[in-house]
Length: 86
Image (cartoon, rainbow, N blue to C red; front, side, top):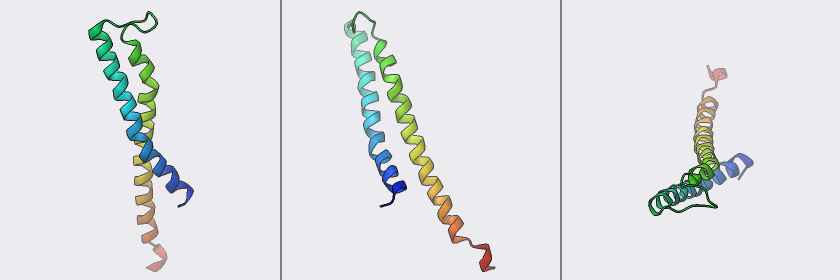
């Protein structure tokens, strides 16, 4: 397994975990709002603020993984087409 494959596999495995954490923050925000909880005296929406970096991470992992896949597919097509064979 080369370095690019290892990175792609790591992103493939990390993306679902980031989405689970993001979902957890959303559930905490909803429950906190419904139950009138406060986190260190801050209102319920603080869970959404805390979850914002996880959202960015999940987007980055998802987009980069898809980009790697598309990039690899394009590379394979380019390698299959050799203008010198004409």
